Amino acid sequence: MMWYRMNRAAEEFYSRLLREFDEEKKGIHKDPFIYEPLEKEETSHAEELQSEETAISDFSTGENVGPLALPVGRARQLIGLYTMAHNPNMTHLKINHPVTALPALWVRCDSSDPEGTCWLGAELVTTNDNITGIVLYTVSSKADKNYSVNLEDLKSSHKKRHHLSTVTARGFAQYELFKSTALDDTLAASQTTITLDISWSPVDEILQTPPLSSTATLNIKVESGEPRGPLNHLQREVKFLLVLADGLRTGVSEWPEPLEVKSAVDLVQEFLNDLNKLDGFGDSTKKDTETVKHDSAAVDRTIECLFTVRGDLDFAEQLWFKMSSSVISYQDLVKCFTLIIQSLQRGDIQPWLHSGSNSLLSKLIHQSYHGTMDTISLSGTVPVKMLLEIGLDKLKKDYISFFIGQELASLNHLEYFITPSVDIQEQVCRVQKLHHILEILVSCMLFIKPQHELLFALTQSCIKYYKQNPLDEQHIFQLPVRPTAVKSLYQSEKPQKWKVEISGGQKKVKTVWQLSDSAPVDHLSFHKPDVSELTLNGSLEERMFYTNMVTCSQVHFK
Image (cartoon, rainbow, N blue to C red; front, top):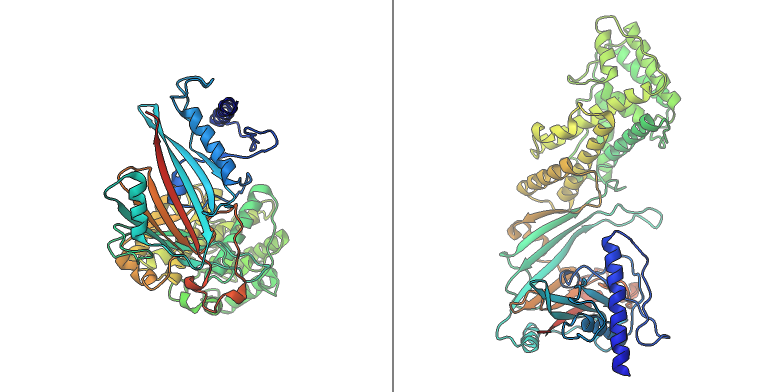
């Protein structure tokens, strides 16, 4: 009777998984389902993941907890049913043969057993499309300050389990070089993280510092808009540019809070009066430039040598600077441009401009030099587009100044981002991309202070990515680096994650041991120490450890 029930359960479980698998391939997405094995009153949940790489390469299991964790005994039943259904020797099962191989099955466990098992997994082994065996995985996790493990013991255990004479050990360490934090509970931080991944082989001991012969990769994710960031003033200009672009596209603008106390109209009138006193030709950039340099220095003095406001702002760029920090309505735009056009028509000012601008305001200014100007109707989207054009010109020159000044890119490299030959909305998108690249570079310059060679390579990598992809501030830029170039960043530090993988020739059969300072499994609740349990410097030794283990066993069907 027991065998009959087991057989029927295996058939039903396989049938249900196969149906879900087929529907997933057809693009039919469904909510998780409840499966009831063997006994009606005891329900459990199962989940399929892509492959064993989820467990081998990283113990993290994603953000959405989803199905509830099961007792280990119940989880083993599901793994057993999955194994039975795929065993080609089980010909008595009412399953179509040859059996369709399903993806790997992973079952959450509640870690209630002494080993702290948190996942059980099973993945099929196939040869020429025939199922020849199965690899079974056990993943355990514990929160433990007083862990004790020996590398030779791990090697010996792997040899015995898999009947091997020799094994190899590969190490992996991850160092968190920078991670942004919130200023307070009410202000969310931009999620900027810079980590360093290092791998090497052979491994000499547990928690070995990676040797200089290792392979290393920087992982960089930067979200624009860090409130304390040195590019905060430039980020605000980009946001104002987006306000204008949205207004041009939709006819509706959500104006930001002004930075200036004086109204936009008063600021522009004062600006025009100052120019008039200088016979219309003077350079009034000094005051504005010094003010912004001071503001930037107040935020972070170390950035002054990296990015400062240009000292050669022309009339239109100074106008952008004043209006982008003070305009709060469409009426402000109309009044400001009315004042400017009237001053040009009267000949009160003859402002100088950089060459190369195609903006409507530049055209009017050049016409004013000859005493004749086109009549412009400041209605509809005209005032919005006029200011948007000025802002695009100004920001493009800012970025050119930085990238070329720091010898990180040439005009040819930047051509895609600064060309005026595409639609104005596309120009705004490309300027956004360029700003994100700048944020990435400045973050690295501030927090890891890399050599110029590395910065140049990172710049080129970002440029290549953004020529082919839309803006994505969640994208993680990866850059291979020589350990000798970054050794000062990690050799005296403790890693956030340290892992060793032991194998003996079979790709899928590994023993993995990992130590980390953050909980690696989302569906379990670990005790978290409060502030009183931590010392002031909060180093890795004084925080809670999480140890994790993956062991495998392989079963041959034929």
